[in-house]
Amino acid sequence: MTDEPFGPQASGDREQESEPGGALARAVARIRADPFLLVPFALAGLLLSLLDQLRLWDPIPTLVTERLPALAIDFEFSIFPTGTPGTTRRVAALVDLETPYLLWAVSLEVAAVLAVSIAGWYTIARAADADATTTGLRSYVGFVVLIAIGGRLLGSIAEVTLSGIVGLALFLLLFVLALVVLARLFVAPAIAALGSSPWVAIRRSVRLSSGHEYGLVGLVLFYGLLGWLLGSVPAIGAVVSSVGVAVVHAVSTVTVLESVSDNDLLE
Image (cartoon, rainbow, N blue to C red; front, side, top):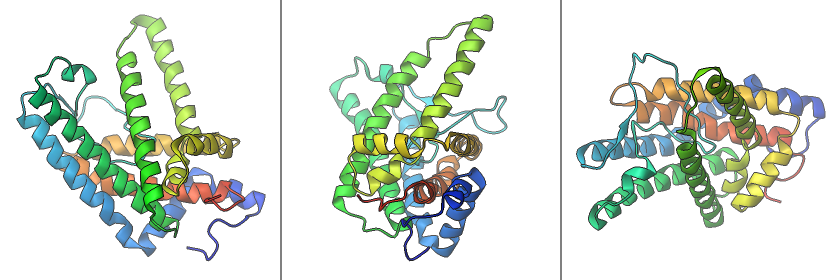
């Protein structure tokens, strides 16, 4: 890590380091220099695995991730760094539940959000050589909640499908659009973890990522495919995807942000 990680850089250096290989290599190098960066998400991954088991044990309808060897390639990427859980619940599964079951189901989701939020906030702050402040934690939790709720709502809409050529064309169009949106929001988690409000983090990420979309789309595709692959490992998918993907994703939000920002990231 440099003495001035957020200082000005030459334009050519920034463009090179914001490319997928450069940002990824710098993130891996930073993790190798500070292996403790692996710990928060390793603990979060263990909790995600426990929550998977609890969802399977209770009577509330639960979707189970297809394990390897899978019949089709999938894509698992979240704007905020997280491991790939082995189970998920649709919002529809919570409708008309009795109060005890509803509270139980909601508590599991809250525990998952808090686990990945704390892990992401601390990992990003440590990778950026910044103070892990309560302001940053509040902002990051708010950002994760905002994205998680938005993702659930969009996921419900995405369940409406069209068949044939029209359906395929619409799917490809929406997938490309989603990749661009994810790329433009790539550094938002780092900005939020360093103390900016969720909306400020989103606006700054959109502005700073301008002109770097191709490289960032490459990172999104890489993490999305790797997240699916590691998350599909039987029994330990949540743990290995947390350590193998979420940590590198979190640190690379910092390395990319360093390369595209001319100013102190805390401004």
